[in-house]
Length: 341
Ligand code: AHM
Ligand code: MG
Image (cartoon, rainbow, N blue to C red):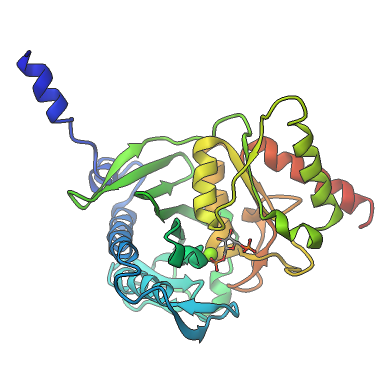
């Protein structure tokens, strides 16, 4: 056997680690403090990932009996993920404020005179914990040139984010990070305990193939939403070009749509009059990533990134993914609102 062949099949060339990637772009995409912040988020992600992997072995998937600020039961793993993210970022030396979907109030981090504000959903899709299905952490990063003093100082449009990302704890653990220019995906190699660059410069496929929506909410949808979905189904009349996939973890649905070519919809409906998803913790980061990857987002008549929030826990209708699927929503939304409904 040719020795060089056997050697190369045994030893794949090492991939770039998350830390190497960040260091290699210091001064270009990352200043010292942003580089340090991202490295720390990577550490928190590994810690949460290891807890998620043990759910069911250790007692983390039961409910705690507490109810969070959104009125939902808090599960133990949500609290562990929240605590991990808060503690790691508090010690990062570059954060001045934190806001979490699981915390009623924002957290002021003492120390620096200026630095980053990180808003995050520590464990999105938490109803999927006990069935071993993908869940994830979502985060958005803003720069504060002076220390925020009140909540009002943090109510900034998503356009002001300098970066955003998510981590998915699924069949593998992936870390996706975007700034305005590009989106990169890293996969955790459990052997080395390192995130390795697995999909550089991710972009949405051009063709819309997948729709992610909970169709059992249809009785509560506005009429324009029912019409938009009917119009999409008509595309399958002669040949199947569209399919439905809905995990019920926004972040996991988004990731699949980014790779396969899909859109995720959660409209305002009769049960969720202002929408279900949270603008600051969930929608803004994913809208930012979608746009950096060549996709689109809307709340109905414009990007969620242009909304100035009234409060940290504000909700919104949200549609995100391949351009075609988002533009269709805007057309139906605009028609109905211009008809005065
Ligand atoms: P969560 O942050 O409490 O998990 O809620 C958000 C989740 C999304 O991940 C998911 O897409 C949506 O809520 C599912 O809602 P529904 O059960 O109404 O379809
Ligand atoms: Mg969530």
